[in-house]
Length: 117
Length: 109
Image (cartoon, rainbow over all chains, first blue to last red):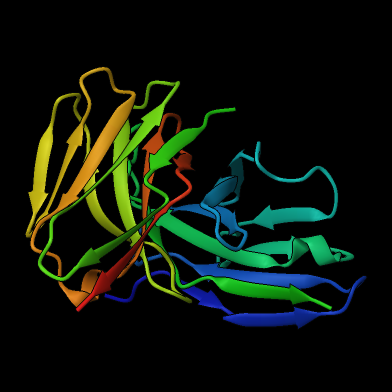
C-alpha cells in the first residue's frame, strides 16, 4: 500500500514564475492537508481539503496561493508569482474517510522542496 | 493562534541513554501526536494519543497525554543510533495539526 506521494521532490523557480506542487493521498484516504516548513522550524498548517471542497484555508496566504483537490487526480498547491520568501519545504498529509475532529493520524508525504532564485 | 512549546530544543546523549522531551500548550487539544523527521523526509507518525491521561507505548517509545489536555511527553528508552533525528509533537483541535518547534536528538556512539 503506497504512502502519500508528492512530486516533484525538488522544484526550482525564478521569481515571478508559478510553482505547482502535487500530492496523491494514501489509497482510500479522502482528506488532504498542506503544511509548510521553514528551515529549523515545525510545520505550519496551510489548508485542508476533501474531494472538490476546501474545508479550512485559514493558514493560506490571501494572495498568490491556491489549492484544489479535484474529483479525479492529485491535490494541487499552486503558488503564483513566487518570491524568495516562498522557498520552503511543502508537505502534504492525508487521513482516511470517516475522520472526525480530533481523531488525528495524518500521514505525511516526503515533501517538495521549493527554491526560488 | 495556538502555539506549542516543545523542549528541549536539542539533546546530545550517549547511546543507550534514555531520552525525555515534552510539549506544553496554552490551548486544549483533543489529540496529541508525536512524529519523527529525518533529513530530507516527511514526518513519520510514532504515537497517537486520544484520551487525557492516556499512556501509550510503541516499542522503546512511551508517550502520555496530560490530564489537563494541554501537555504531552515522549520518552525513548535505551537509545540507539537510528533514533537520531528531529522529534515533533503535534496537537489537534479541529482537523489541522499544530506543531511544536521540534527536538533535535544527537547520539554519540
